[in-house]
Image 1 (cartoon, rainbow, N blue to C red):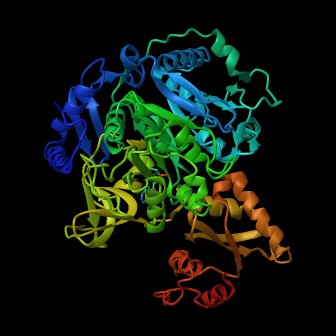
Image 2 (image 1 turned 90 degrees about the vertical axis):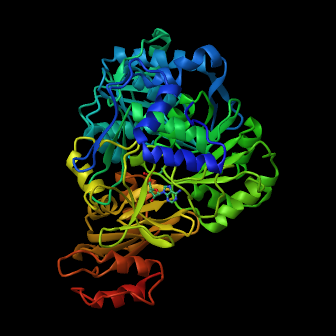
Image 3 (image 1 turned 60 degrees about the vertical axis):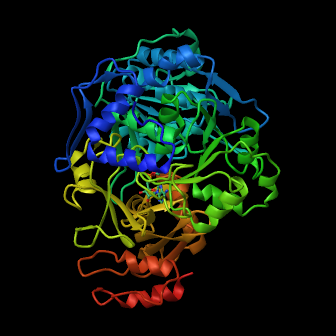
Amino acid sequence: MSNYHIKHLEEYYQVYRKSVRNPEAFWEEIAEEHFVWRKKWDSVLNWDFKKPEVKWFEGAQLNITENCIDRHLTTRGDKTAILFEPNNPKEEALHITYSQLHERVSKMANVLKEQGVKKGDRVCIYLPMIPELAVAVLACARIGAIHSVVFAGFSSNALSTRINDSDCKIVLTSDGSYRGAKTIDLKGIVDKALEDSPGVTSVLVVNRINSDINMKEGRDQWLQPLLDDAYGDCVPEIMNAEDPLFILYTSGSTGKPKGMVHTTAGYMVYTAYTFKNIFQYKEDDIYWCTADIGWITGHSYILYGPLANGATTVMFEGVPSYPDYGRFWEVVEKHKVNQFYTAPTAIRALAKENLEYVEKYDLSSLKVLGSVGEPINEEAWHWYNNNVGKKQSPIVDTWWQTETGGIMISPIPYVTPTTPTFATLPFIGIQPALMDENGKEIKDNQIDGRLCIKFPWPSIARTIWGNHERYRDTYFSAYENKYFTGDGAHRDAVGYYRITGRVDDVIIVSGHNLGTAPIEDAINEHPAIAESAIVGFPHDVKGNALYGYVILKETGEGRDRDNLKKEINQQITEHIGPIAKLDKIQFVSGLPKTRSGKIMRRILRKIASKETSNLGDTSTLLNPEVIKEIMENAF
Ligand code: PRX
C-alpha cells in the first residue's frame, strides 16, 4: 500500500525520504493505486530543467473527469459534490450530487461540442462563482478542450488580452454577477472586450441576475435552452498524460500576463494527494475554500483536488462582508464546515470588526484552518487561531504559486507542529533549495536566501502558452538546473521555511499577484502623464498596497491634481481591474535612475514604506537630487 494518507510526523519524514530518494517509484505507486487510467504510462518521469522540459506519466491515457466524477458514481452518486452557497443568504443553498454533476457536465460538454469546440481548442470562461463555472471547467476537461478561466473581476481590456493570447473562439459568461449588495454588468464587459477580440465567434450566456442585456445576433446565445436540449451523457475524450488541461494567466514583473500551461496526469495526481493530506480530508467532511475559481487556488483546491477525492466542496458566490462581517462564520455553522481555507487579507479585514461577528456562530465543526496567497502575519495568525479555531484547529499556512499547480510548503495538520508565520516543511516530493547572491546553494539553517526547487514535482506548469523561451528565462535561467520561485525565504534551525516575500517586481496585494509593468503601462497611456513607477508598501489589511510616483507632461502641469488621481485609478480599472488601483499617488518631477536608465525601485520602496533612515547607496544615481524632493512630498 502506498502512503496516500499521512497520519503522524514520523510517517511524514519516512515518506518524505522515500519520495526524494526514489521519486519515480514513489509517484508511480500513488498514481497506480488511487486513480483510474485508460492506459498506464510507459515512463514515470522525463525531465531536463535546462531545456526546460518536464514530463510525468508519459504514455498514460486518462480523462480527469472520470477521476473527479464517474468513478465516484457507484459509491458516492448521491453524495454532494458541490455545495453552492449563493451571495444572498436568503437564496437557498444548492447541493449538487456526484450524479447530478455528471449529468450537468455531460450536457455542458455536449453543448460545447455542438458549438464546434474540439480537443485542444481553448475556451475562455468569464463567469462569477456560480455552479455553471465549475460545470464549464469540467465540461472542457471532459472533451479535451483547454479551459482558460479569467477572474470575473478583471476589466474588458485584461479579458481581451487573455482571449487573444490563447486564441479563444468561444467565451462563456453571464448576464451579470452579484457581489454583496452590488451587481456587476459582466456581459457589458465581455461586449467591450470582444471589440478587440474579433476571433470570438460564439458567446454563451448564463442568466444569473435576470438583467436586460444586449445579445449580438449570430454570436451570443442564452446557455440554458441549449443545456435543456443537450443529451445528459458524454463519452469522455481520452487524453494523453501530458495533454494541456488548462491555461491560467498570472502577472509577471514585465510584459503581458503569462499563460501558465498545466497538463493532465501530473496535475491530477499532485492536487489530489496534497488535498487529501494538507486538509486531512475524511469521507463525510464538508470542505470550504473561499477563493475564486478564477485563481489557481480555486482550480486546484475547489475543483480538481477535492473532486478527485470524492469530497464535498463548498462554492461560495458572495463576499465576507455581506450582508455583514459574520457571513463566513454563518456559512461555517450552517453547513458544518470541517476544513476552511482562506487568505490572510480576509482574516485581517475580519479581525478589524467586532468579535461578536465570530462569537455569534457555532464553529465547533472546524478541524483544519488554511491560509494561502501571501505571508500571514503573526497578529492575523493568532486571531485566526484563537477566535476561529479556538486553539483546536491547526492552521496550515500553505505556500505555492500558479506555476506550481499545487501546495509546495505546508504543515500537515495534526502531523507537523505549527509555528506562526512559518509555512514549515516541504510537502512530500518537494525539494527546496535556498540560494545565495552568488548563485550557490546554502546548506546551513537559520539563514535567508532565494527560494528554488531543485527537482520536478508532478504539477509544475510545463510552459507559458506560446512562449517557451519566456518560460525558460523567467524560471530556469537565474540558477542552473533549478526552478526559481521569485520568492525569498528564511530557513530556521529546525529546517522550517518562512516565506519573506517577492524578490522581483511582482507585488502581492490582498493575495493577488500584480506586476508593476502592466500597471505602469496603463497609467502612462493617460495623455497628461509622461512616466510612472509603482512600488508596494505595507498595508494592514491588504498586506501590501500600491504607491505610484507619477511624472506629468508639461501639458498636464496645470491640471487639477485630485481629478488626475481619480483618472489614473480609472485608467487602471479599465486596463486591469479595480484590484490594481493605487492607494497613494505622488506627483514628482523625476524618478531616481541609474546611469543606464533603470528606475531605482529599492529607494522608492523605502520612501513609500517610510523607511528613509537608510536609503542605501545612492551614489550611482544619475539624478540624486530628486530623492530630496520625493521625500519631502511623500505621505
Ligand atoms: O509570493 C508568494 C505568495 O504568492 C505568490 C504566488 O501567487 P499566485 O501565483 O497568485 O498564487 C497564489 C495562490 C497559490 C508566491 O510567489 N504566496 C502564496 N502563498 C503564500 C505566499 N507567500 C507567503 N506565504 C504563503 N503561504
